[in-house]
Image 1: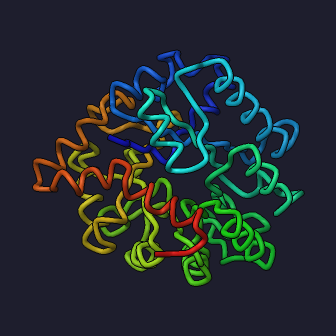
Image 2: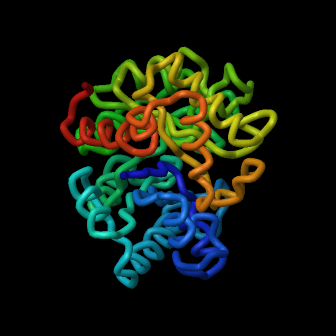
Length: 311
């Protein structure tokens, strides 16, 4: 079974701690991912707001570190399509995608920067992080919508088959991206604002617009986003609200492990993700619905993005 995690900040910890993917100091080490069922891992290239050498150079450091891991470890493989992902998983490997968290990581080059990262395997483009940039507004600082440069970047990403990711984006940005979308839009690691009010969580209007594009929303496991009681039952409550508003096809997983999160009570790392599926099953979700959340919903959206059109 495919289990996709749409947001792992593991590259940041690999570089900071000078470790490899096999080291269990990581919340999403290879061993812990395998124990919890994850076999399609989205590895995030995140440039902090303040970083020595500049944003672009930091993205290069993270990407180079992951390329080194890919070359050194036979059990991981960079994939560029759902078909390649399925083949890699069938061969017993952990398939990897790359994502950029914040278009400030291509601040100077814009579309050309995206094109260069895409050539090296980038599959997801997060427009913002916790501050607005020259492309789009962030949910963290009251930013506005897309700028003209942002519109150009979104259009270029969709032409390339790169999934546009609105987690961290302002509501205005999210709605504008959905309105101009010609392919699925995703929120890789966001929860439902109606379940727990937080600037990082999505309104019902945003959930519905993402669903209309054929996109998915990855459940974020950071406890402050989940709200009380901060355990697997809170995760399931967000999943059920996403399903109620956007349909079961919109629900996915985007844990945010290795992102310096406060993990859920009783779910300290990726090795314990089976608890989420057990809770959904207990609540009456069908096996087919759970398979969708675990990976099939994302693979459908990714396939549609590569095909250049929203279903």
